[in-house]
Length: 271
Image 1 (tube, rainbow, N blue to C red):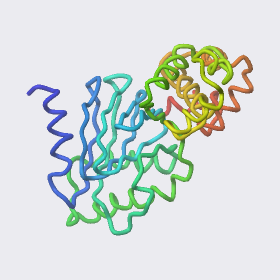
Image 2 (cartoon, one colour; image 1 turned 90 degrees about the vertical axis):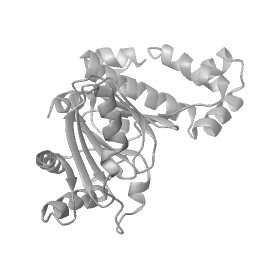
Image 3 (cartoon, rainbow, N blue to C red; image 1 turned 60 degrees about the vertical axis):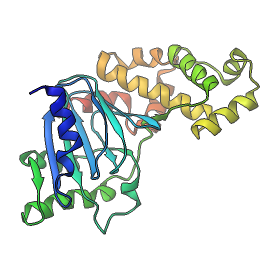
Image 4 (spheres, helix red, strand yellow; image 1 turned 30 degrees about the horizontal axis):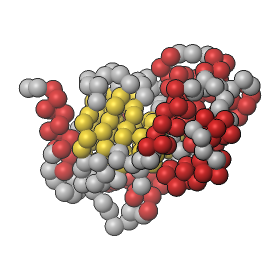
């Protein structure tokens, strides 16, 4: 069987074959990407062994080690692992009457030790878990129910896509010069815009300020370098335009929730 066709068939059909089941799938990616698809059930995705990039029509998400992403049902998305060796641990849930607003948005959260133990417990499950399969179904359902309780700190590990052609050029300019500390004034002058006009452009198109976008861009790049390039924290700091290591470390902590040195230690867990 052609492997690509298998991936498409699985993600397009198997998950939603039975409306009331919880579907579980743990597997080595074995592919460079999973093309755009959607499913009626909501998806919990935890990855081991590398970075996963997930794209929707609105944003590009970055899923690093020790984090999970929740994808509501009906959201079209594609998945790009940093390596075919990435292991994806997926649980697909039908909607329950008890679901709150937490499950309506694509969101990324850090994973604590308790949730990791629960994730690894689900490794024994494969395929559909039906409501008649007790206590397995109740345990699987409890996994979903506890997510809002153990996921208190959503991380902004996503960047929206600009639709404005001018802003696309500006964002590309920032990406290509990530090792430079580009000031807002310099950026406005480079593209012959007033600072006021540039500020409005970011807010209108991306719903965030320039400094918010630029900071997240630099931290996501830093995460990728720490995970993929095996660079030191000091080298990464310079590569994303920070001349001060403490400033970089403090900014990384504010965005990611841990110091970069601690992140390097944690990222190897469960790889």
